[in-house]
Length: 307
Image 1: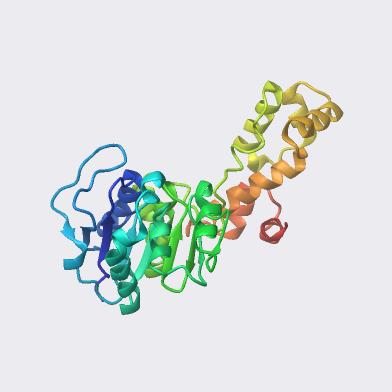
Image 2 (image 1 turned 180 degrees about the horizontal axis):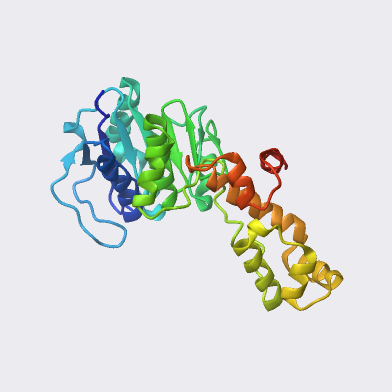
């Protein structure tokens, strides 16, 4: 069966990576025997990106017929522009988007593009998400939506929404995995040099950056060493030597600077690493457990399910 067509909407003030990231994912799929037809349409007379790059030659949405099972991507735009015009000024476009969904299309958004899905009435009763800065506003604007505050992407039925910027790439890879399996998605991710392919289990924040809002050089060294040597199952004695402290002093200072214990931090790093590695079809659960410094796949499952 031929792959469905992918239509990207080109709104005025579009964020380039919201558009180009998912587009490149589907283009790269052709190298692995799964070509997609990609096209564009606009709903405003002029289309200029948020950084001033203009677009030309795209079709008008009213002349763009959407097929059953087609994917329609609505990338994010400058949020100040999104809310600067009356809703009615683009009513015809929102009706077109709703009609595409009714016909059977899968409608996807990146970042603030979720608001356009909401104005089309497509988020009512649906789990959805957007960039973390816009989550509260999305829920307030569309109270019947079930806005997920800290996920990379959300899917319910034929509505797909993502958090924005690089999360649009994660969503496109997720769609490839849905259609063709994890191996193809992994190969495309590797082609894009996106080795750490993320799933909907990942949050919009990063455990590699969290808990580092401090200036203690010794604790930074310990955190770096944990990430780089996770498979060695680091002990408090080893980490204390790296920080040039006693174990008792390390445990006290680590909690004081990060807000959590050393062991809790190691668990968070293990969980994040495992969730990433499990997206790779070449890795068994036993291999992931080994890389994460765990004793068995059973131990890995316990780490992943703990709250």
